[in-house]
Length: 462
Image (cartoon, rainbow, N blue to C red; front, side, top):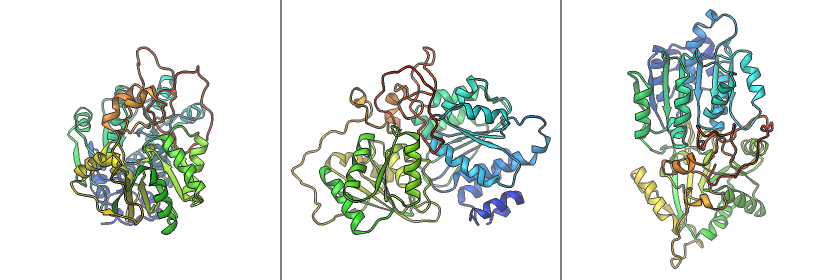
């Protein structure tokens, strides 16, 4: 099957072809006709399988079909909500690419940058708004955006939004939308919480589940290497140098750990940079751009980057530390093996992490193959030590990342963090209570945030 059999316009097909896509993926083949019919949709597929085009292409088709009937300033007709800034920026880029030959305007809004330019662009009229929940509510609160004309609502990575504590913001957004609209819920996984949300949000939806829940891509080769915690960095540097790995995405659990590892790798002669919520917008933009351009070999990231980073043909992902939540393992290694590409995922596991490994293998319903490098065998006399999770670290130095999983929701929701940096896009009120942990920084213009009174920095934020 080709894209031209799906009922898309010639202008959209031309843009898709220029992006190098010839055949739709399974989720696209199933989702596009359903969306064009106007039905609500609940769709699940593995990360990297083309979910974004599955909703953006038919959305563009529907909006462009009757755009000529719009008189005066363009109202926002389609709203795409995403949990993180990286994902919002990625979706926004895709919308721009696919709407290249259409007379539609789109805008991406998220926190961490000045709100004023976003307000100015909204005044000029926007057809498609891609937003993170916190900044969208800020704009609505300032009467900068009118949500009463929304025709299509998309919740992208809905499971991540719930995991990050955005359910209250989502409900506030839904209350401001017209009752009659088309609803599309896309997610990498479907938890029971997601299904409960879908029952309230969707009306007689079509359901698509391309892959079994919480499965890793078969295009990713997975391995585990048992090694002592204190020798992980030595082993990683050795493998990168010996095998001449040129582009490696490495995951740690904490921001402090990401910074430290990047510093150590640079001392080893391996160019590396860290990306996490405490990095400035400019630093994160530069690090990601340098990594994509192969100027640096290693990008060390926290789970803030497990979704929303789309790096073409990324060959290697390394779990320097296993995630506290098994589902996050699937999303981490999903950064490689995307589309038709293959990739390798290596997990460096110390004795402290054996239980985390068992939880991951239970989720995958199989054992991950083991490999061993001579000279790096773990010391059997070393005893396991407990791994402090996000809740327990709240009274500590605040370097532990919120892992975005269901087990961390309590800590996330009480952190007061709207943008993943320990700061809120707007002050809290007694009525609002604690703000959810959430939107992580993405490439942007690096403009400074509005000034605000100093406040205690919460622990456990991404």
